[in-house]
Image (cartoon, rainbow, N blue to C red; front, side, top):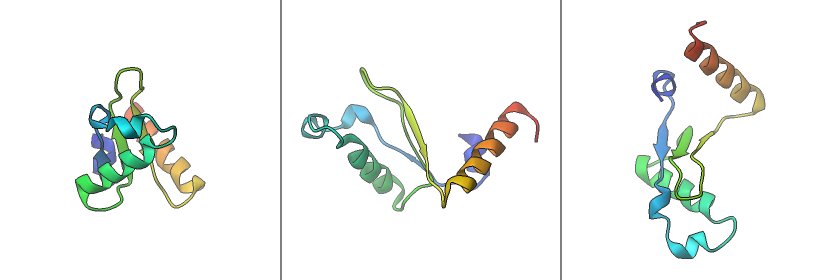
Length: 86
């Protein structure tokens, strides 16, 4: 996360363990609920939203951007920085 913060990205999260049962029961409702929670946490649409998973649910990171090319460049830059090539 430090690499993302260093790039000035707004980062937020949501806690899947706090997801209401009525949301869990409906297919496709978790992500919209989580995005709303993440926006509430920072007061605006973040660049990055993550959660650490829950029982039977994998952790996830979502990165938003203008378009596929800018996201690909960001991902490559992050990978290179993590590897130490930058």
